[in-house]
Length: 232
Image (cartoon, rainbow, N blue to C red; front, top):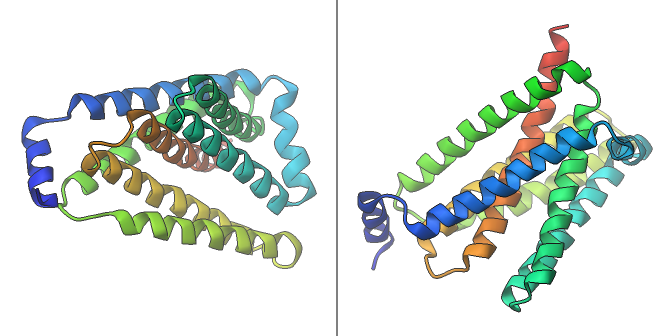
């Protein structure tokens, strides 16, 4: 069956139960992550960003990047090996990494604005995810190359932030844009995987979509936070 036929069949019949399970699972993980961000902001965990990024921005990028990479690796190994305990540990590591980072970002804003900032971020992220999903599902082509482009964006962002940490601070903004772009591209890639790779593990696809959405979320969170603060 061609990619076009697969796409048309899915479009005509609506979302499959597998797609609904992936969306539901990723949404559930995001709900837990956002709730933990709100809870962690009032705890010492919200200061982790200060220590990491305050020492050097590249240190924060590397530590959180490693946490996400290791968390995904452990979760995938658990799923593939049929060990749900291991998969759970990896997933918890992922959720805590994004939640602690988000809490650190949120800590810069006054407490009375926290719910507003999180609410706006949820809406913007949901609209962005819907737009990318519509783009992917509306085109009967492969988006496998988006995965490669995402990796290039991540690597480019790390290199630029490393330079900006010690030489040209203005490059830190460029690095932010590149890593944000990397998560957007990965989101498109993961959505394509859900659309076309119907025999893949639901758990693995759920984890992939969650990481991409959470990555987009924490970047949007930084932008929304800065906008709200600029209005005071």
